[in-house]
Amino acid sequence: MRWHTPANARQTIPVGLMFLSNQRHTMSIIQQSGKAQDHGGSSSAKILTNPFLGRLVFDFAKAMKAVDMDSPIAISGTTKKAYQAGIGPHSETATLKLIRDKLSALDENMYGRIETNIPYPNSSKQKCDWKWTTPSNEVFMIEAKMMRLMGDNGKPNDNILTHILSPYPQQRSALTDCQKLIASGFPGTPTILIYGYEYDGYPLESVVDAFECLASKVVLLSKRYFATFSELIHPVHQSGAVYAWTVQALHPA
Image (cartoon, rainbow, N blue to C red):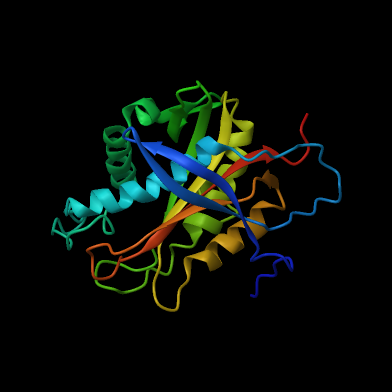
C-alpha cells in the first residue's frame, strides 16, 4: 500500500524558539509539519500551536540521549539475559520511567509533576501513561507509544506496526488511543506521543505519515511536533525521533 500525502507534506515551519533548561538559555527550533488536513469544513475546532508540547518533545529527545549516556542495561523478560547497553533495548514502560526521571532531574520545575498510570475516568482498568501538569497548571494527558522495528540482535519485529496503526481497540495502538483519550472524560489536553528508532531502509517518518493519514480520518490532529536524537551507544538502536500531537474530536459537541 502506498500512503498519499498532500502536496505540501514536506513543508515545515518553526513552532518554538527559545527554551530554558537548568537556568541556562538554550536556542533550538522544534519543527512542525505543514501537512494539511481536509475535513470538508465540517469541524469548527481550532488547533493552536502549543509551546509546552514543543518543549516536551525537545526535552524528551534530549533525555533519550542523556539516559543513553548512563549505559543502562535492559534484561530480557523471557530469557533473563542482559541486552547490550543503551536505552534502545528497554521496554516502553521502562523507557518512559527512565525518561520521566531524567526529565525531572534536568528541570524539576517543568517536569516535577508528571504522574504515571492514571486510571481512565470511564474505565478504571485502563491507565493513561502520563499526566503532565506544567508550571502554569496546563494539563496534558499523554498516551505514548514506542516504534522499534529491530531487536537487540538486529532482526526485525514484524508485529510492531500494530502498536501504532492497528484499528482494533483491544490492541491499544496509538491510532485507537486518539479516540480513547477524547472519550475518556479526562480534564486537560489529549496528547499522543510516539518515539522510535531509525534503521537503514526503514525510515521512522514513513510510519508517522501513515499514522497521521489514518488518525486524521477519525480525529482532528494538531500539526506534528518533533525532535531527533542520535549517536546512541547501542549498535542497532543508534538514532531516532520523538513526535507528538494534541488531539480533538472531529465534530466537537
